[in-house]
Image (cartoon, rainbow, N blue to C red; front, side, top):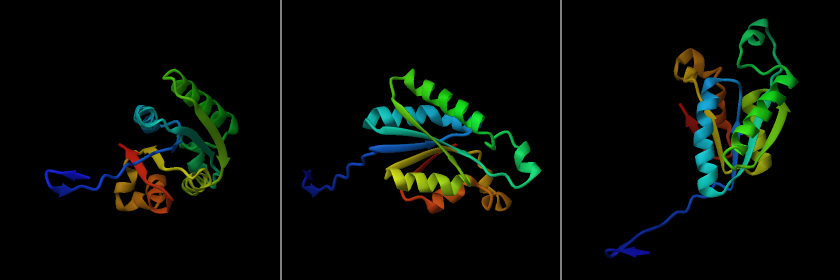
Length: 150
């Protein structure tokens, strides 16, 4: 395409399939409107994923954002689906078990997702937190772009 005598390359970004991993955190709730906007703007297919974590310590079990109960995950997914339904968005829900970052990336690969949208607490910004950060791991392992909503 030529504009004012310059050749311009137009790249159309299409997000046909969006994966939205959720947990009970405030950050995940705050990312939902961004997800809705993207899905509506691009006419994307939306998958909402929650991962039942295999806890290895008592400390992990006490973390309210750690999803260790399949029943709690089911309720979380139902609530997320209802939220999107209210906005006229059809969301498909997925429940998996495993380590969150690896499971998120595996599901994105299985779905051939074009985008993962995640909320983040920013804990991975410290030297101590980076190794434990699900967000940081997803960014580094993802088969597609990752949009982080602070």
